[in-house]
Image (cartoon, rainbow over all chains, first blue to last red; front, side, top):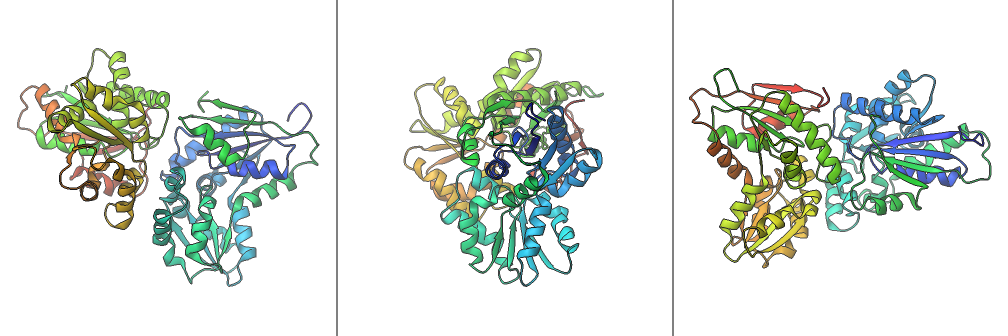
Length: 264
Length: 264
């Protein structure tokens, strides 16, 4: 809680991508106080093993808990897929929201032919978690495809032109005609939306979960006040060029950016 | 030292790429005992800040020292560029070789027109270390270019075809006509040699440092015995699919593969 009684939302991600969720939270709930942790020293998570991702997620959560957050948002789709049940079991006292459930609910409500595609990191797809969550809602065809080059392309700023279009075709051609809804289950992928749209065609709905998760958080919080909340950004590494990236993902500068170790 | 009196060589890298150096060491000095550490939980290093890379390098070195290595080989070009002077100052008692000096010596002896290109990770190129080391050998033109997508391409197995060729053109076209020698200053890049060769043409010499560093180590070691030395591989993470990759980089299975934390 802040001094004025507003709840503090903790948000974490393997890197900067989760700032797109923060941006949406700030838009929908301007008065909320947010503490963001990006584990930029150990990014990416999506190529690593489940046990390592779980260990990192526990350390990230404990870091935010020590800062007194009242609600935890897992902005990383890899952690949401691999470790959110584990975190919830470990911290039953804490309200934890992940980007997984809103993604699944949006996909299930949007699809007409009950044919849903999921794209994400290798670890996200390997977990099979989207499939199993979708099937809890009934009978659906689910096609999953890891797109490991999408994150490095976005981080290199290659979001338009021949190279990302060829990479998108390589990953997505096999999904065409098999789905009518595609979940962009990685924080970086919405930046490739125009290319994905071109490859998939106009008839496939693209689901971007950051808006959905912010809606969920807004439903949970007490009626917010007028005063704009603070945004503190903690990162485990700040390489040259990152400050510009932070503003690009966030759309505004935060109130503070501090380099930290999660092992304090 | 091993029981038979052979020195133990410690080799470390941010991930698996340094196994190509181990492969060359095993070829040139079969009797050497090698302990390899790949920091696969925190890979890559090349996109991170100098202070974080130095901290990781110190932890990796201390891990190997606790295992009694007599000689340390830094197989990672990023660590060699950013942290090798720091490690040498921190451990004056230890013989430390990096892949940097052999790269530079080979480039300087190969170039005819004294025009050398360096390609590597963002952190390697940002350090300017190759340039400053080359200029110690006299007057040379040095052109440096970071190629951040090369590592994810190789890790995705995309080492041939249109996509890697377009990426290589994007990075390398600007070097054509300006250099006669190109140093592949990242353990992954030699796997893209055919593509780099095609883009740069036949008249540019490509320097692959792993052979050179193994020669240096061979010069330093006492006359080796006949018995084949042990190879122990330690990794901070072992995601699915890695065992096959290890054998691909190494050309043979090691004597042991163990998942560890560097914080023991």
